[in-house]
Length: 160
Length: 329
Ligand SMILES: Cc1cc2nc3c(=O)[nH]c(=O)nc-3n(C[C@H](O)[C@H](O)[C@H](O)COP(=O)(O)OP(=O)(O)OC[C@H]3O[C@@H](n4cnc5c(N)ncnc54)[C@H](O)[C@@H]3O)c2cc1C
Ligand code: SF4
Ligand code: FES
Ligand code: FES
Image 1 (tube, each protein chain N blue to C red):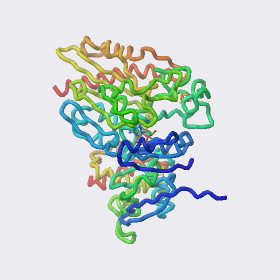
Image 2: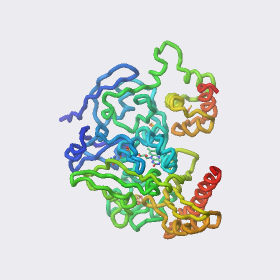
Image 3: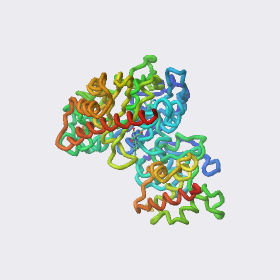
Image 4: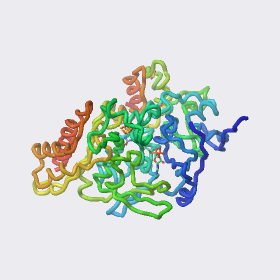
């Protein structure tokens, strides 16, 4: 005998595309993005809200996608690193460009989360000086400790 | 994770009507999803309160009214909060990370469970998670645990920064539920563990926090939050304090001193307030207040450092507050 898991319908605008899926309510937004939509940019580092590697924008604001269920976000807009530059064959987003130019990563695992957080940080106006950048990037850990270059890249993207 | 059914009502009365005995409310999810993943919470039904009309921040000049669903980030950025309630803005911004604060709600923050590692590990004894199973922290790793308000049954700290600031500001919690609406001063809302550490607040099953009211006073406007952590940012408090002072003609007329990270509930240090009132503000009075704030502390084998931390954090916060005041002229 098999038990069908409960599934709920949810519509999300993912990187500009309206998408309708049926998901088990236990599926986090992070798992839905990765497993249902094939968007593996958001990473599962800790799955506990502690590392920031799963950071995406929800209606334009940064969140940890591992600590919220997909079903809770019907009708909302989600942006992942894949949706940042617009056209995947086209130009990089300025923050992506700055990370490349300033060598702001080593293994790259934390990078999509760092970049999404940095995009939000700039939008919030928290790039006043390096200390402010550090404080407002504190939700994103980097196991390779690329922190100095991450701060430099964000300052550069802010035009400093 | 245990399977559950999901519903998202749009009216408060529907929320408690939907809430069966084995169901839980969810708001931002940043605490509950975590606890469901580690097997500490396993509701059969989730009632998502995100669709209820409990957002919004309003002020009538005397009181700030904050809806339970207001995000921690939005509350910190609200002009009335940043201008008239500095301790609240500072406590919020010292909590969690920017991406968590964008999910975390006011109500959820007040209801969050302790971060005690044994509570989060279902293979360990824990009276708070499983009454009468014992407390692994008493003889275990309790470096981060409470020195104030503890009992033989539980020594877990209350993790919220926001609640510490709200207690210093004399906030009131608005509650509604099957039994009708009620308002409770926040100092009565969180319960010390005593013999029933599984009960953390006065909320009955089905009751909802609908909002919080914060009086806008001169005392609240002269306030400050200091949080000491194991790293510079994004960590729970080892010790924190919310201080508010009314100083006139060289004398402290009124004071609020509330501790976080060292007690089982947000902890009002009444003896420290008494030590300050009537005294001229300054190093001597602040040191006396720091000493008085430790009254009743019961350190264990490995958390005695918190007693010294309380003395210093209280004195430093008061110094910072009065220095900033002096600079303003
Ligand atoms: C890595 C990490 C670091 C953190 N650091 C800090 C920190 O430094 N300082 C700090 O203060 N907090 C910190 N937090 C905790 C965070 O602030 C809380 O998880 C958050 O505030 C909870 O709000 P929520 O809306 O997400 O609650 P949820 O997870 O949705 O709910 C939590 C609980 O509250 C109940 N609930 C929610 N809303 C209501 C309501 N209106 N009425 C009745 N019951 C309700 C739910 O049923 C549930 O039991 C941290 C969390 C994480 C994951
Ligand atoms: S301190 Fe409290 S929460 Fe921690 S193990 Fe003991 S009873 Fe459980
Ligand atoms: S995976 Fe979400 S914060 Fe680490
Ligand atoms: S670049 Fe390796 S974790 Fe950040």
